[in-house]
Length: 294
Image 1 (cartoon, rainbow, N blue to C red):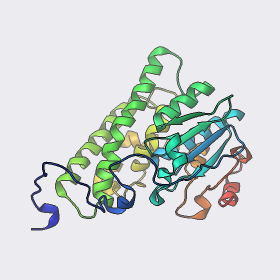
Image 2: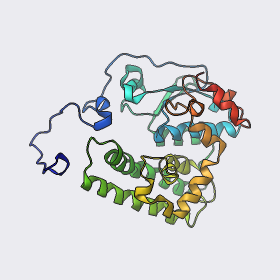
Image 3: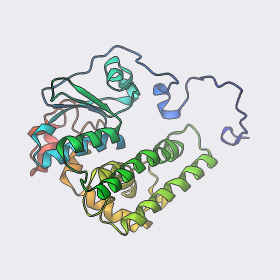
Image 4: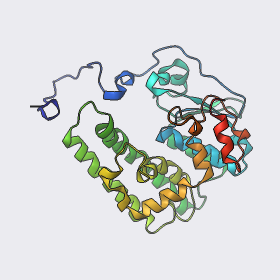
């Protein structure tokens, strides 16, 4: 009997067996707190972003780029990569900013005292309220926007930690786990498809933080760029999600946001280390490639 099909009987008391977690075993542990001393760098701009261009990280870099595209100078930021595969998230400075040791984290230095914000949904809402953008003021529309924002918070773990992990990263394939999370991922795509059949964006006719939160997971999935699972899930069959995904992918701020703190792939598609967001020329996309190692 193969390991993946062997019957497993949980012990009375769970114990930590290292390594555990497949590709990310070196960063998984059952305790919180820092593993080493490391002070976070800080730049000259009002906002300091500590992140990586994962789906959760892209939410916040996209939001900042969208704010800058609207002309909000107070949204200028310095982006600092947190290389999670190397354990940067367990440095003392990052843990002080986010006790949960997850990216992204934001430090707002625009006031008398710096304000730390962690969890991607909290950061999006904080920025939306700070700048009065991408969140409706009408009570009904706001409720709809926040409902879809928090839908993403509750749903994406099934896609990422569930299907993504067991399909792409687990040390061996487990049919039950993959089937379980594939079924849930397709149900979620159907939820989105039905909503987008009746609405241009998730919260209505206007682009909001709900779209900014959901797109890096489900939009990128629909475009075939997540976990190599597009054919497996037959994502092309969700026509309304496809329309919405392509529509958002075409936004210049989204294209920039996806490059921020990206440390893999084509160097022309990376904007990592420190950079001044205010230096971006919103009308000249080809200049971005020259800033990759700035």
